Every structure is written in C-alpha cells, then in structure tokens.
Image (cartoon, rainbow, N blue to C red):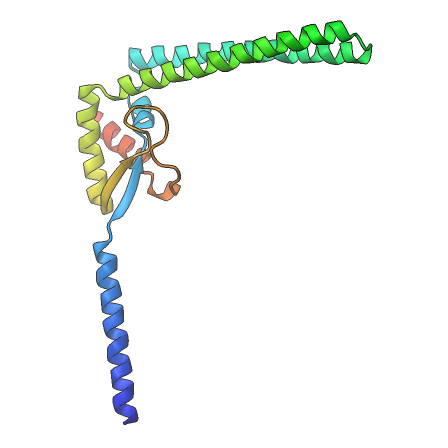
Length: 182
C-alpha cells in the first residue's frame, strides 16, 4: 500500500509539472520598443532629425532662461523680505506668479509640439517599413510573441506604465537597422 501511495504521489507530481510546463510554453514573451528612440538613433544624421534636435535645444535654452529669471526674482524677494518692504514683496510675488505661469504654459505647448514632430518623424513610411521588418526579426530571434510600443499611438506619452528594461528591444532594433544600412 505504501509503494502504491508513493507511485500515485509521484504520478500526480509529474502530471502537475507537465501541466505547468505546458502552460508556461503557451504564455508568450512580451517586449517593448521605443520607436522614437529607434528613429532618432537610426536617422540621427538626417536633416529633419538635426532640425528637430536643434529646436529641442532652443526650447530647453528658453526654459532655462525663464527659470533663471524666476530664480533671480526669488532672490530679490528674499532681499525685500530681509528689509521688510511689503509693497516690493507683493510686486515681486505677482511677477513671479506671472512668469511661473508663462513658463508652465510655454513648456506644455512646446512639449506637445515636439512630441508631435517626433511622432511625424518616426512615422515616415520608409522608416516604418524598415522598423517593422527589424522589429519582426528581433522578436522572432529573441522568442517574443508580442511587441508593444513604449509610446501611445497619438504621441501623448507612454502607453506602458512600467516595464523591465530587460524586455526593451529598442537597442536591438537599432542594431538591426544600422546593420542593414551598411
């Protein structure tokens, strides 16, 4: 009876392990790719990408300038507080508020514009075809059954809230594209 019970337990364990293995084989592997990163890296020498990068730098310079103005006003406010000049404090506070609001609006508008331009650049038909082929090749070689874009289709931000860097195949896709370009 003891040997029979042991055989049943062993058989049950083998069946459970086999079922688990079958379920794991059916579960596909998932990867994430950042097409904007792929495009910007792959086509970094193209004139449209250079123009985009220059515009991005101009926007950052303007944001830095506006931020510096606000910091200078905050320094002046601290000086006015030190001498207890209430009218000057109120005046500086109002100016800081206006400049902070302008900075916030400028940043929001420019970020939206830059995101749209980046999406247009990465959506070019020539690039789309090359990228799709490279993604397919990398996914098949690496055993992924699903590749998700790290960006939403409308370019409004990330479609994926979190993912492990180990499933990001963007660099592999870039390598595949660069290898074919040579």
